[in-house]
Amino acid sequence: MSQDIQQTRRQIFEELSKIVDPEIGVSIMELELIDKVDIEEKDVNVDLHLTSPFCPAVFGFKIAQDVRDNIYNIEGIEKVKINVSNHFMAEAINKQVNESKPPSKKEENHESKHE
Image (tube, rainbow, N blue to C red; front, side, top):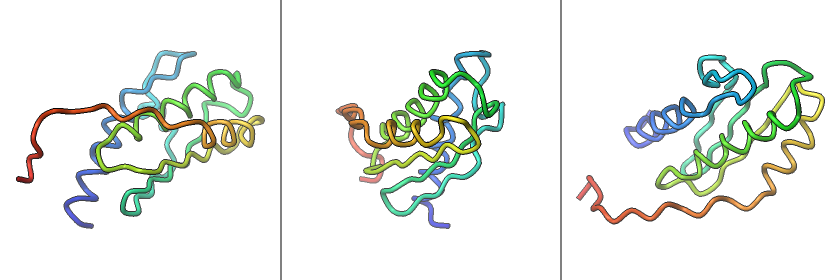
């Protein structure tokens, strides 16, 4: 695994650690809701499940949207696809989240560390 992909993976997991399940107030990483993270150059695919197949859909949408938005904010990431599974609203959550407009990138004025 290249340095760049390792660095991106670390950044992704840092961002995922910031996301908290709004119903129970615990990090999605502590809850082990992330099943898989695939990185292909500038594209990231994330497979996740929710705390139960019938957890309130509003919380499922919030978690999935937060995962997508937080990863989009990482420098160099151009496409993020979320795949929620094992939930009664998984198809609707995936459709809405993946078709929503990505957040605008945070502008940073510091120089790159690679220079």
